[in-house]
Image 1 (cartoon, rainbow, N blue to C red):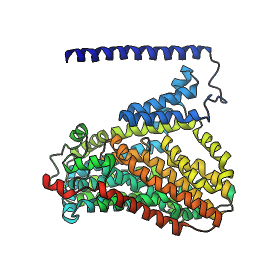
Image 2 (image 1 turned 135 degrees about the vertical axis):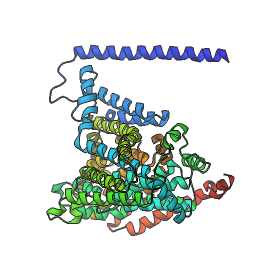
Image 3 (image 1 turned 30 degrees about the vertical axis):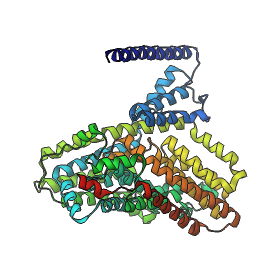
Image 4 (image 1 turned 180 degrees about the vertical axis):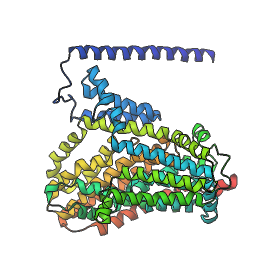
Length: 566
């Protein structure tokens, strides 16, 4: 035994020394290359790896490391470092500047970008709101109320899904709000935090991409080239019945909830939750289950009224920033709103409202109100760090021209394979969104290609754009570096890697059926030039239900059995 221990210590020493020498050699080579290289700060500078397959290497390394090591911070940072190294062509000075201060991808500039800073401020403010609701006892009271009216685990899951469907205006707002409201309910019915994360994530982007009145509708509409003579909003409406991944994800969720089916890693988490371990991670559980001794007299209204006020405020400010009060229609206002700015303004006024609402009634003290800020911020530190690193990695990928590489790759082959293009576009967009963590960035690159190839063939245009949107949502859903995936983990209070590993098999199952749907739709739609959604979409939905029925034979979870055992 002692010999084995000594051997392990010796091996660790050798590994440490070897690692030190490897790092030293790399930096020596970088210094030599820096001294011998010319001016790399000129405006026309381009990396040797620009718009090549190597541009996708940083996110692939980051995602691979995260899935293997189960440690997301070092994985994301490694991807960022690799991206900076590739961009700098081995020049140490340019590498360091790119890593930190590149205007298009550095760590510091990523944080100071207005849209990103708005999301970070919103996350902090909403975490403050959540901490205050917990201190008031509103969350506890709502959990007790829900237990009286929601009679089962199935009911709690369906209620979570329903709330996610109702908050369709923005995916960030959806993720954090649904998590804040439903955590007490799902905890009461021993639903794992991994399952809660999935329920949140699977109703955030999928429902937003199906809603004509949302920030996503605006992004899709604006991606259609102005010179294409295509009405972007009408085309978006035309894509909705063909958006297989989004529609089938909702069908799949209802099926596994009502049939009590869970498989792969999610099954383990759900069984652990039924035994009392909601997190399947003892360290995380210890940190998250420390209850505040105060707020025992909180009422249901102490949760409901602040959340309703927050939702109404978000809608109001989205209309405001979208120009509704300057004469544009409701749909145009939601489509053209500044979502980040709107959410910050809504959360700020909500905090003021909560201060008056709680303090005037003596629900919490002024000191407790102020203590909520650092407590909430502390709970979100991990999510904020992951967001910053994920944004930086995405920026590095763009800096290396990954979007140009994918654009050229698809465009050069598009004309020859029109019939199979929806299927190919679904796969390509899913991969690109998975690698970059950005669904918006993905469909912004690919929609112009589709408009160019299918302009004049309305049905195939709708099918192909829907394939891009579905693939973008799918890849974003699967990616550990996606901001909505990160937000869902944060909203549910789940270990991020646990959310990714449990969600991936579910997303891949729906993705496989969606791919079949696009293959069939492309062949029929191209040859018949007629609408096929009314036939293909119901068949695909029935196929999802059929697959879940097959899984039920082996993977059904008997809730009552575990409840009796405990």
